[in-house]
Image (cartoon, rainbow, N blue to C red; front, side):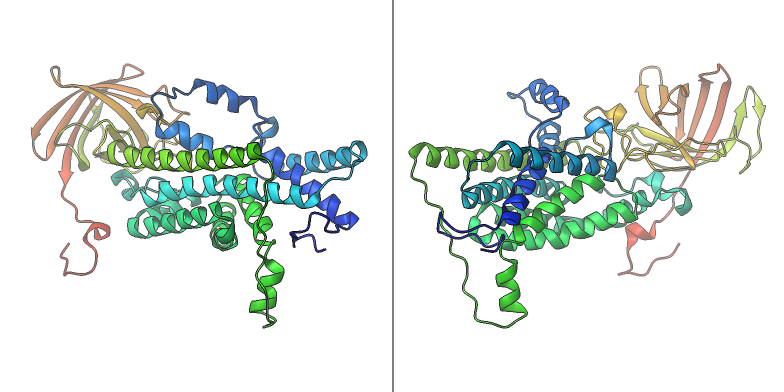
Length: 444
């Protein structure tokens, strides 16, 4: 029989190279699916199962082992070497004849559910636009050339929230199709096209997660290969083709109950992560801080006057000490444009953090501006700024603020070097074509 055509007959013939290939794929996928990384168990046992949150479930859904802390194709190289060694060990040690049809069936079942969980989880964070959120105001005031390629890609998708939700819906549909054996090929086909594009984007835009996206892509390829000969015969050769009507027969009640329990567990997990993803979207989207910003300050400000140690510094695009402009976000982030050199936060695109202070999406992969999380004390009109960039965490300002009117803010205080700071900020009421669109006349 062909390796990719499973038969109802338990005694179907497998060629020797097909048996070797089957064992290779079993080891290859087992190495990536089974939790071989001790950090997985550390996280699993740290979860408060009575108070589940989005981060716990999403992290479980995207589990992928990283050997020796390697990433990208280096990690995949380790997986491949382990798979080859494991295959030779299996062939050398296990001389007993196995039912290869059964092995192949259960491998496909495991891969269908693993791929369904992974693709639905990522579909949910697109359907509720969390993965690629709308650009922050600070990002809109950053030069195009000051972005890493991955940040440009994320902003390109993020400005079209409806399109991002559509992409998420396709992923969710494909994942649901995988749960049912009769529609699994259709689901794998959708994922093959979708994840193939994601894999190419991860490489081209230097997004990261290359090995994980390749892992998902390899599962989709393996699953669709089951019906590939029939699809070729029907769609390309134009021949009369009979669908494969394989229907597994379970003679053991325990096996039937186990199969039902596993399927139920997968469905419950999908429902839970769907509910928690929506809750995160509605209450505290994980890419941006959840703490509201200082009331009445959201906007873009020109720094009209700036003093360092009581010495006035004229406006300058080259002086590293002179603030050029400031942005207050809707959340508790303030960014400052200066000419001071910045060591870029090179975090990957899909990092996520539960605590506001650690949420670095807006500042990661960006140059030209310095991003600060802040805390305010309205009783003292004080504001404390701390640089969000992990390379500049020592940078800090302790300031007093005065909202002179609805368009002018005065900041004065000290920085981490005890230098005195004085800045007068004038709000610029700018219209953004990105917000306005082109369906009505606009005057700037």
